[in-house]
Image (cartoon, rainbow, N blue to C red; front, side):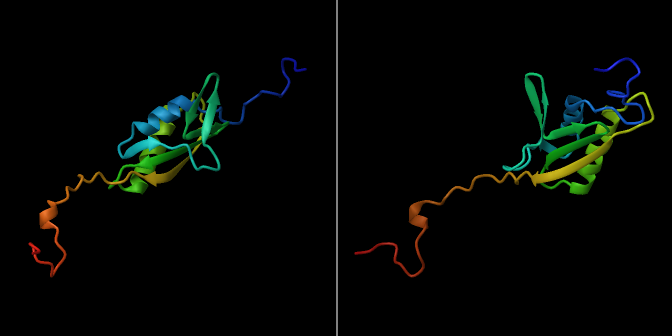
Length: 134
C-alpha cells in the first residue's frame, strides 16, 4: 500500500514516458519515411494502449524507440535525424528532461518500376530460328 509521499510512482529525476501516438505521428510526418514497421517476425515492436496498439513504437520512461521504413532514394541518415528531431519536438515536456530517441531503419521501400510489357510472341524468337517453319 502506498501513501502520499511514498517514492513509488514518483518520476522526479527521470523523464516521463513519451506519448506513443505523438511519437508515431511525428515519425510518419517526416519527409523520407514511408511507414512505421512492427519489427521482425520474432519480436513485435509496439506500445499497447487500452483497446489498441501503436505498431513501430516502443516507449518506456525517458525513452522512445521508433522503427521505420525509409522511402527509396532517401538518405537514410538524414531521415533518421529528421525523425529523431521531430519526435523530440513532439514529446517535449515542461521539465528540462528530454527522452532518449532511438530510430531504427528496418527496411527501405522498394522502387516503383513501371510494369514491363512483354513484346508480341512473334517478336520473341530465339536466335537462329526462322520466322516461318515449313
